[in-house]
Length: 233
Image (tube, rainbow, N blue to C red):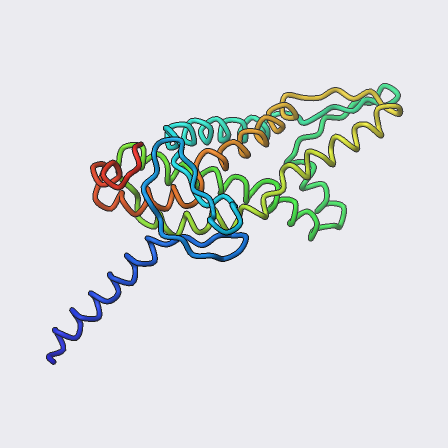
């Protein structure tokens, strides 16, 4: 066979393998492989062996996830632009923001803890929100931007390392303990940060990973490919 024929054969084999893999989904509980089928709007696919959730076709999932992600980005800016709380003791008052609390750890000699807090509380949540917007906004109009698959993999990989809810829980516990010793006033940042946690959880639930991946694959052919691929934006 000529080199060109071998190259075409290998390319065909890769395309066939990719097509087969995209048509399969593995159960996260028992690892059983299932062939993916087109679902009606609102329908859920479950494992035939253990009845675990596999994937779903949520109505208007892209629109909802995009709206929630935009709201989460706004809340992130508000949460970091205003004071988190103000503490008054014996007439002395001091305001604390999320960013100043993180950098206070570094100034106190705990630079490693400050770096970890910056990454887990600020950087990773911000990258996740921006990454979702990078994926969802073009998909809303039937297209995708370069590197979408890599961004999507990064969002999935970063999800377990976003620890805003742990920070919020720790802050609430500390506030309860300090309530009897000082006058504490919650700032706008506190409520924005609490709402940000709620919006981040909602955004993660709006589109499951299988559905979003299907959107990315079908978007290679434009908006018509998304619709014909069994998912409507």
